[in-house]
Figure 1 (cartoon, rainbow over the protein chains, first blue to last red):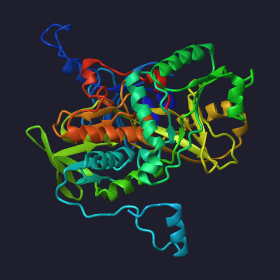
Figure 2: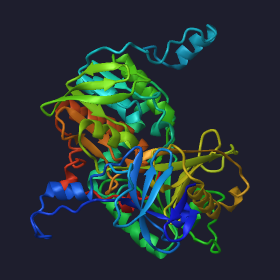
Figure 3: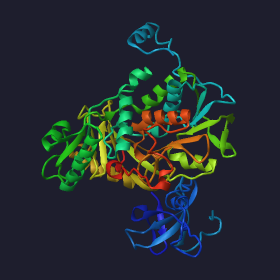
Figure 4: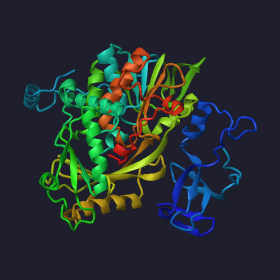
Length: 98
Length: 416
């Protein structure tokens, strides 16, 4: 059982939280047009392909059974140790950047 | 290979069982093979066996980081069935079931297949409507399955709370009579022994650390026991697929999660069917030893730790006690987890990778055991011919680009 520190609510049990996939995925853009002609391969890469890291991975988590806010976490997928919690839109702290 | 039979048992009994050979050798690793199979689980061993048996490729090594059958092959709940929704899956899993039916004879190893039936419980009018449709789909795909009413369910599964007072009252069930269970270790050992007899080298305690790739073509693998040259390499490592893909320089649409199971203390025989209840999210069977074998949903976040957490276990137990109130005081004996490879459409990937000569079998997620024979058979075919067989041509990595998904979430969403 992980104890997760919500940036707004403090330490809570993992059952209050929902994992929301990897953080920092950048939507592919061609030129200035957000509806630009992205290739099927790039689009598939963005939508489906995953690093699925064995070790420290950067993930989005939501405090869904609590305040409802989303945030980022640097978490070890082998030991489940949580190294850092940081807010949406922020970059991971030094040392946990990939 | 020393054949197992009643006669050989009697002969060895007279000699105080001192004449048995080892079931498979522990050979030295050679520096070069025609094919290297990475992963000594059921799928990897089956791949090696069918490469030798069906395609005459016997200069094959199976390299396994731990011991054979020690990953998900030894951690699943042994369920076998083919009640899938789409034609591609139905054909594939039914082919697997067919292979299972002859497997003990084929391998001369008792895999203890017990086709007592696979029961999917329906708890609401909506369940009934959806599963009636699924049943029609199964019939159109040539999969035999029957609708049965509550009184028949009650007869097949004594102790199941079929009363109107149940929190999730049972409205009927779908029964696939050919479904059942088989001994998971037996499947791994049987394939290992039969592959070894055909000349395959099974190398345990040998972890892959990298690939030799030149001009987009695989040349061999680096391992903790040295470099092996091979023009063709097949990966069958389930939850660790992404790790191997990363070594080879590509990514997969796979997320690794922990799937738990648990067994109770042994009981006298209660029922012989396997019971799945999608609404409560749990399933249960009774092993030949009498233990209740139980499982449920995934721990819903990525993990490479082969243990589950207590919250999911509580959900499993709550669902089981809801269905079988009389099991509430039975003690749990063991709990464990395996790392499963989940993909977006709950269908496997069997075939080519972006690296030439490198093939993969992954993405079976929560339901890989039942597919062991077909997964190995189709991967062997693909490796031997450098093109997929009709049975696995839809299960490509390319489908994530083309959008030709085979979305089995509805039929296979529950873990098993």
